[in-house]
Length: 220
Figure (cartoon, rainbow, N blue to C red):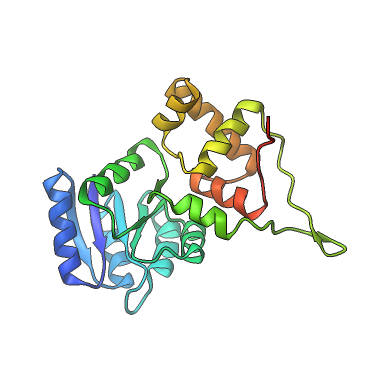
């Protein structure tokens, strides 16, 4: 995978480059502002942009929105010190394919990043559960002051089991397949149905939807 690093701290960029190159990933460029990230991405055509949130001139979220429109093929992964749930949701809404924290070990970081090639969400461990805990309040139309959650197309029993595991933070295809004792292709089939029924685009958005509207699988 060809990677562009976007971060305004030279020392962090140098360390991240070393971690990536030591594990066989090609770093095609470095940007220290959001505008540079957009310009270099256009010129260098990386597979992945690792995007910091707090950068001068143009912030990481704004740069991510531009890239998602101008270069939808490029996968943006936010790499930040912020674990604030508002930043997580805003990054996903802006088109980011993942959200990783800078406190990850090099091995864990590269392992999670590899999930992009399998079309898996790239989330630091615990992010999904923390977001669920903070934003578990349903938000939707109200009737006499009571929130009424949006009603998606009903999920099958197996789809509900997959949803429950996603909410718990089990996000990779292999982990889901192992938990439910099915094949990877079966999990991909169920995930595609869940995405279609909830009208979302990726697994991170499934978790966001579940937390936002209080969606829970029924207890058996």
